[in-house]
Image (cartoon, rainbow, N blue to C red; front, side):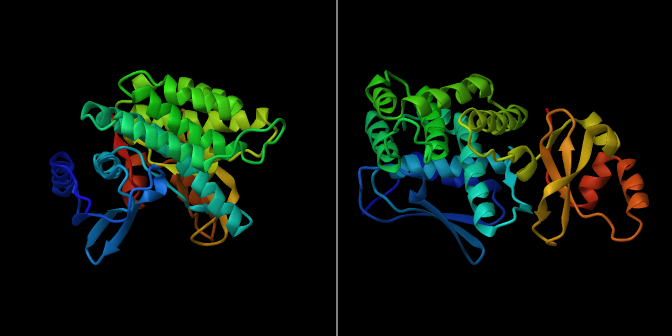
Amino acid sequence: MTTFSADTVKLLEQVNQVYPGSIILRASGDASGLIQSEQVKTDMLGTRLMVEVTDATAPDFMATGELLQMLLTLNGYPQIFFQLSAAEEALTEQMMVMATYLYRPVMRAIIYREQAAHGLLTAEVANAYTAGVLATLSDEATNDKREAALRLLTLFDARVFMANYPGDTSKWTEQFTKHYPEAWEAAGLLVEQIVLDQIKDPASVHRAIVTAFKGFDAQMLMWELPELYNTEFTTVTPVLSERQLRLTVNQVFEIKHADFKNQATGGDAYIALAKNDGQNSFVITPSDTDQAAWFKEFYQTPVQDILDAMKLPYTLRD
């Protein structure tokens, strides 16, 4: 029977101190020799949240990764939300999955760093991680871009993982270079753009998320593949200063009529794009009557008042 280490249990206790409810940790399944993201599941059991590791290959690595993610978000690190929909449900689902695959490696810049500090990024874990990547992706073929986006998303995380491994990684990175030369290089460019060493707090995480969104779309354009438009499609928790909270909406945000539909209403969607980086910070539903007057008042309302009235999440910049 798989058990978790004392350090993992201690981290669980730490998360439970700030989680509004209780979290329980469970292990199941045999060891496949692979590490893959779907090996961790979360389910609500009444008022309790169960985190289940379904593979015995690296239970502490997988469990602490999920718990650290929770701890960061509970402490105000940016989250992503999906409030818009594309023309087709399948496309909406695909865009949500891909946005999540871009968000995770940014958060894991901190998570992998913390896991490495606690001795969890071992050679055995790196072997299983690499095996998981090789099992997920097919080899690149000349001019075959059918899996190019998936390769880039998967190898983006692999780059972040290897950058935090406390030792020589050539044994594993040479395999990525051999099987996915173009995607591995592109993932390296993404990692350079987000600047791993500077990802340390909510503001730098937010900045890196937006950079990853834009960098991914730039690479898609180079490969002549569809862009994701995550700066518009995906809502990222804004990180704002006290001064920005006092300013009026029109000083901090640009309101745009989105090219997507509002998931909640099925109607037109309006998004608040941060003026400093163009990222979707929240979605609004204007009044059906006299919209001109509604928008005029909305633009002149202090940001703090709007966020409070709409019960929107945000983080105060240090």
